[in-house]
Image 1 (cartoon, helix red, strand yellow):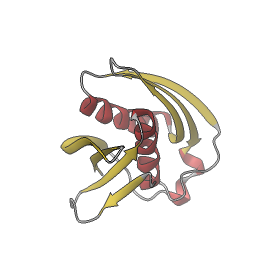
Image 2: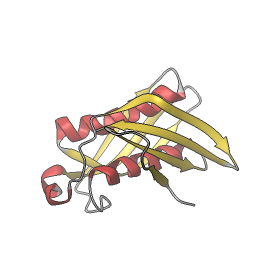
Image 3: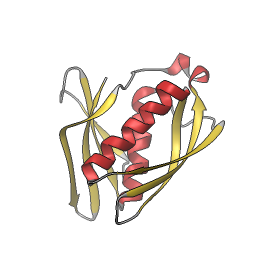
Length: 140
């Protein structure tokens, strides 16, 4: 099973992708991997720091956007790129994340795109053939 698929020609100032997962935890992990790989070539690199954070949202759509925007927050304000993560999500949409990170200054030569935010534009989450699929558009 592939983790995610970039959608070409979906938007001009944006980047769109579809993430996949057998469950919500795997889906959100693959969203994290996709966002990191969109920003940095070979983002699965050294992991020099570990962080933990929690998010609560009123809907699954908002949880996706809030999660990606948290990744962007760590990039912009903490100078950390999340390279891998362990995710737990309960039925009340409380997300707990344990993430491995790399310092941005160690990745400057591989930086590709600066993701600004996730959007609700064309956001779609559905179950299909035993997988959860999530289409996401990122503002770059």
